[in-house]
Image (cartoon, rainbow, N blue to C red; front, top):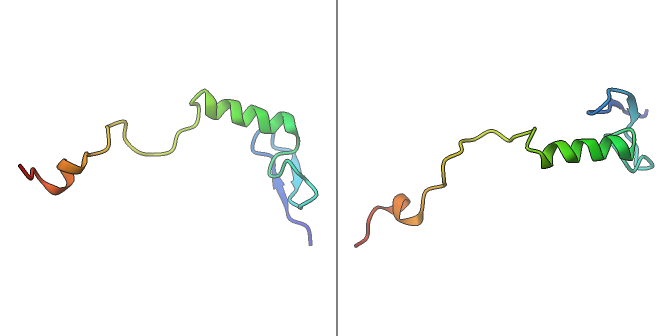
Length: 63
C-alpha cells in the first residue's frame, strides 16, 4: 500500500515513495517555496531569543 500525504506547500496529494524525489513536496517548485520561507524566517523552531548561558553561568563563578 502506498502512503499518500498532502504537500506542505500547496496541499496536493503526494505519493510518499522513493521514486518521488521531492517528497513530501509535490514538485521542486513547492520545495523551493518552503526553503525560501525558512530563509526568510517565516518558520521558527520554538525557544527564546535570549543568548545561551555561558559556561561560567552554568557552573557558577570559579574565580
